[in-house]
Amino acid sequence: MIDFLSLISAALPNYLRDLETLVNTDCGTHNKAGVDSVARVVRARFREFGAEVIDLPQEKYGDMLYARWRGKGTARIVMIGHLDTVYSDGAAAQFPFHRRGARLMGPGVNDMKSGLLAGIYAAHAVAQTGFDQFAEIGMFCNSEEEIGSPVSRELYAQFARGADAALILEAARESGAIVSARKGVGTYTLTVRGKSAHAGVEPEKGANAILALARYTESLHALNGWRPGVTLNVGVVRGGTRPNVIADRAEAEIDVRIAHAVDAAPLEEAMRAALVGDPAVLSGARGVVPGVSAELTGGISNPPMEKTDASARLVALAKESARELGFEIEDVATGGGSDGNYTAALGVPTIDGLGPIGGKSHNALEEWLDEKSIVPRMAMLAGLIVKIAGKNNRPAGARV
Image (cartoon, rainbow, N blue to C red; front, top):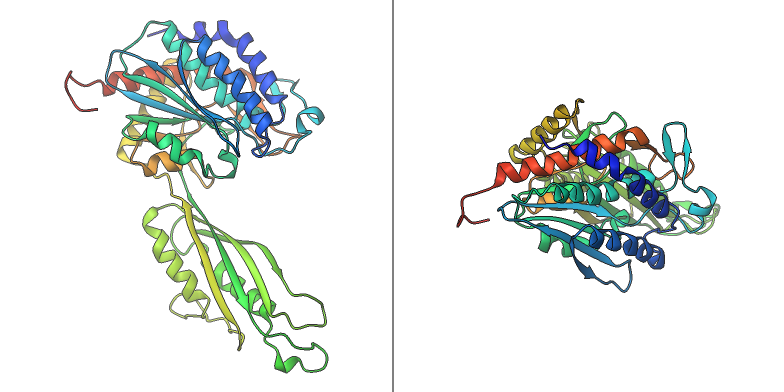
């Protein structure tokens, strides 16, 4: 077994210096200059570590890049990490990188500067050993993952499609578990149109869109658990003009999550049926406000990452790699989305949560990373890459 622990332990001081640099850089998704600054550090490290780098410049978002190490085998492995965070400018200065006991703190330290660097350093560790029984170890660096990868999902598809494995570098769960399944995510908008009238003089002549929206909200929330893994949440509502006017318009934004792709179309049908109080869908029909109309728009934009036989084999290899290093890991499903949802939709066996252990993502004051987890988790990742390459090598002339 390759001694990745020693290789990565020796590189830890440099990893920590890079981590501090990235955490102390404001790089919210819409701060192109900040994200580009992170990309420059990452690009320099890739080149120092012997990777070929393909630059993917962007006008609106930060620049993206794809780095790869080429070998003599047949397996293609693609890692994905993101350069951006959710934080506003000033967060890095207000909550800079620091230690709190065994934890490293700072905005983006867990989501996902630690995982981003883990992929780079793990791939370098593999290269250092001279192991070359792979066709390609690649890593795509996304600059707008925190808003759903609207541009990058099309870009990294060209590198990920047909790969033997996609390894997503989001942090491990606080328990140390990796992620083998993620829910699909959708956003819908419900627009309700009614009729305005004077609320004090002739309210009977109006049709209150806000009242209708309230009833629709109850009907939609009744669909939670309609099928296993289905959740809906009316998270934003707006409507009306003045308190003495019957509201002629109201609107809601709805978050929808599904565990299985086959549930997408039936769920939307059930949502539309709920808006008319269909008793076949609801346990008891809600009253519909006379004189209003409702329009539902949107859909599932991020397909679910379902655990398949192929991804289960990756999980088994990850567990084997951890076991050889002296620790055990579990795999879990989670409701949040990541780039793994998109690689899975391409038919690429995908697992996620392969970064170090941390928590409190998106909370600048409390976001943390377990410093003691860095070396073993990177060693596990390096070992996993070697195992995937070994398992997926094919005879010369075979199709990749």
